[in-house]
Image 1 (tube, one colour):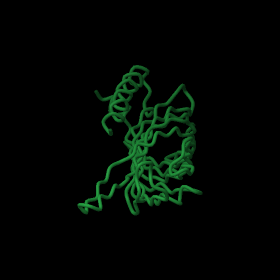
Image 2: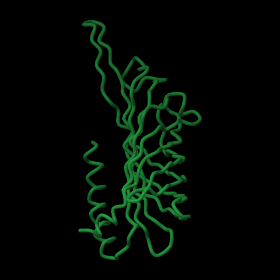
Image 3: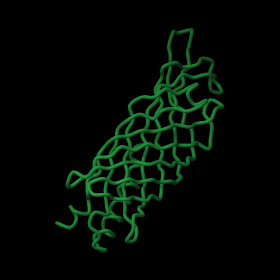
Length: 208
């Protein structure tokens, strides 16, 4: 499943890299890799608790100003405490692990002040959220666990701060993610907070 989601990202990176190089735009193409936590909000906290998460993305400068395109894959992890059993199941699972595979395509604006940069973004996308479920066979004392795929459309907006260290930027980013579908008959809303690094790919390409 990860490969199915990451392959389009790789192809997109190649296309954007060629475009950025052709336009001669230094400091306009960055890759993004972040780690952190996604904090469930509202009734989402009834069934999800935060665990270690990651995110991968790109920043492609648009035009001559501060606009940039921001595709991002969110690989958030949660502790899953099931409230009601899924259809066809009798038992609820506690302290399981749920994982998101969500792609968001956003438009952002960055303001650079010396070595610092401040940016905001907003966009939409979707993907799946895998939640575990269990079946218990009392006759042979066996438990079977599998995953349920929950389709999810999302809208996400956020902001971040960057600090330039030469060939890359260190960043801290926070956002709000709203889900258009429900899990456990409850809304999905979360606040991802990530720290990480954005290598400057345009500088690397200019040397090729």
